[in-house]
Amino acid sequence: MEYEGMVYRPPSEARSLIIQVTIGCAHNKCTFCTMYKEKQFRVRKMQDIFRDLDEMAGYYGDMPLRIFLADGDALVLSNEKLLAILDHINEKFSKVQRITSYATAKDVLRKSVDELKALKAKGLDMVYVGAESGDPEILKAVKKDVTCEELIEASKKLKAAGIDLSLTLISGLGGRARRDEHAIRSAELVTAIKPEYLGFLTLMLEEPAEILEPIRKGEFELLRPEDIVEEMRLFLEHVDSEGTVFRANHASNYIILKGNLNRDIPSMLAYLEEVEQGKRFRAERYRRL
Image (cartoon, rainbow, N blue to C red; front, side, top):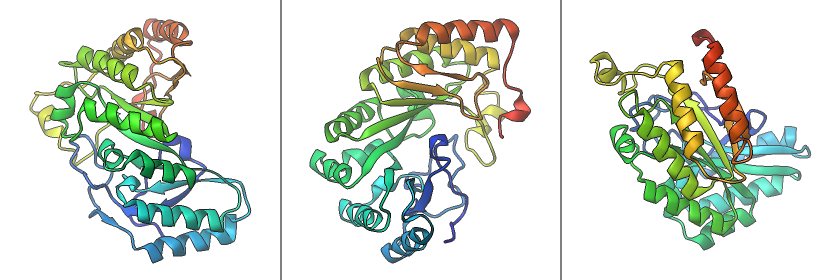
């Protein structure tokens, strides 16, 4: 099996079998993202997907494993194709523990609750959705092509179908000018959605990210680690999402936090205070490891 281009997956899928069902990202216009810029989006041919699954079944068919459907938004596929892929997985792998994929809110909204339930019945247990921010102004500025209302509506459909949601936000995405709005509006979004899982990354940029141009012009000021602490403090002080598993332990993060909302908010706030006072931030050179 050969992968096309760089393959990305969530941190929690580090030990999963990754199967590309699409190449690239259907949207691929976010100003901060370079993950799929070198790829022309397309849906892979079903025979190629099945060939990869058949080959990997020769190695892992009888082993307990997780499967992640890549690239950027596998749920853009029609339900007919997704169900055929899930059927093939279930036929070839006898001990699948879970099946997951990236998705966008629009992917979810294009499907009915019954269609999503059909995917769940065939083994699609969770999808990862990059909300990035709950601030409408930031979403517009970074060309995310989604609204908070769409994110909330998509989450309702996923809950109705029994599919878990892992939501992602990006610290620093509003820069210094909208630090507080990003933190508070994101807390309000999470409160409205109450996802099963929530992950925080911290903004990291590479060429040719479009957002680099306003940074060079002085129109967008990146956050310092101290600003990231204050942003996270504001988020934790405003969020209300009982039971959500919270992680901010990605390689990009200056501060490592993990716990469950709302139970562990006091201890995480206390830890932020310790980190700030001791300036115990992750060194820049380690943020890409």
